[in-house]
Length: 195
Image 1 (spheres, rainbow, N blue to C red):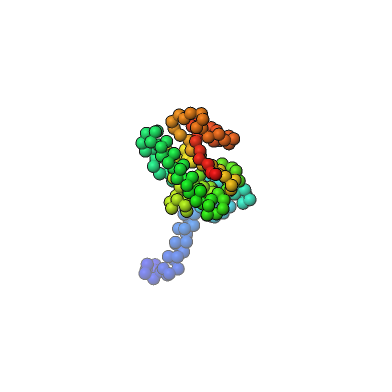
Image 2: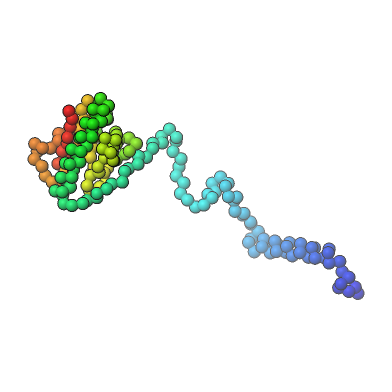
């Protein structure tokens, strides 16, 4: 009998490893019922790279940019009477700035007669142009949340109005009359106008 050292291990060792691998494949195939379903490749159609919600795409023509809302300041400081005093002061400050812009440009910043928030949406509210005359951003309503509690602006270029809603009751004679449906929902509406 040949000695174990004289066997050709350079042939036997790889053959043994191959046989062992074949036995392992047969064993795994037998234990899994013979049906192997590999995972799809990452990136295949319908296979998410990571679990995340992906909404249905919106057609490019229907995309509307989202307006950026300015953060509010001076949130709910003081009593309702102090906040109303601040609103009246703010309206006079805004009126002065609008008159300055109107004198410099020959007309007020126009909204074509429509009512807008004063300067909530910086990209679209023309009231934001008053910042140059004010030297700082236009004031924000003392209650904060300027899209609901703020100041409103309308102008046809020749005339303009700036509105505010007070917390305290005011006489009917002091209420600002407007045909704007949304502003009519505001309680105790006051306004300044020029000229």
